[in-house]
Image 1 (cartoon, rainbow, N blue to C red):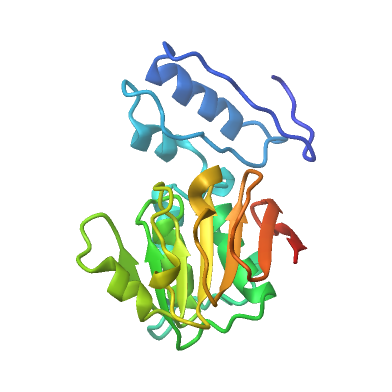
Image 2 (cartoon, rainbow, N blue to C red; image 1 turned 60 degrees about the vertical axis):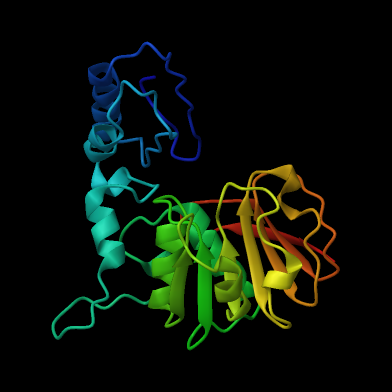
Amino acid sequence: MNTLNPFEHSILILILILIQAELIAKVEELNALPTCHGILVQLPLPEHINENAVIGAISVSKDVDGLHPINSAKLVNTGTHKGAEKVNWTDLSSVPFHIACTPQGCIELLDRSGVEMSGKNAVVIGRSNLVGLPVSLLLMHRNATVTIVHSRTVNAEEICKRADIVVAAVGRTEMVKGSWIKEGGELQFVTVRYRSLQFVTGRYRSLQVFKVRYRSTSRAKIHKITNLNTKLPSFSCRY
């Protein structure tokens, strides 16, 4: 691959016996390629490759997954002290660094659905670097009070019942029950699992972020992200 059209994408399929040095060399090659504007390493990597070393090798300006330590640190920075650079968190397209597209899609979907985040109690189920942590930080930047629920959380159901917004970003099917969501609450799923939404019913609005086709028993309005781009997700809805 010598050139990349800026409006195209290429997928490099690398065999499992690839050594770490070869993968990092490929990343560095793409870093230096002027027509390559973004690099995304599909995780998880084989066990013999150090994930942190590979992510750290990606140019910060091309790290479209937002996983490079510098991009991650920028997301954590609240900028509340005097002299700090201020970020307009209500316009993610103006943020001057990369944030993973799926967390961006979660916030965009809440915005487009008219959900007010400021002052609300938000629960994020999951603490992964790809979705759970970044969406928690984005909710915090929108002035929500955020609680993270994970595999060691005690009384997860009770915590969710008190939330105005619940974002389920966990790889367990049928984990969240309708009884977990208070009436009038906002429920958002981030999933690639077909069965994740079955049996989830209740008098709440369900905002769903998907990468695959799905079926749901929810009687509420359903929103679906059909295409995720680093800066501006596109959406479709069905009622």
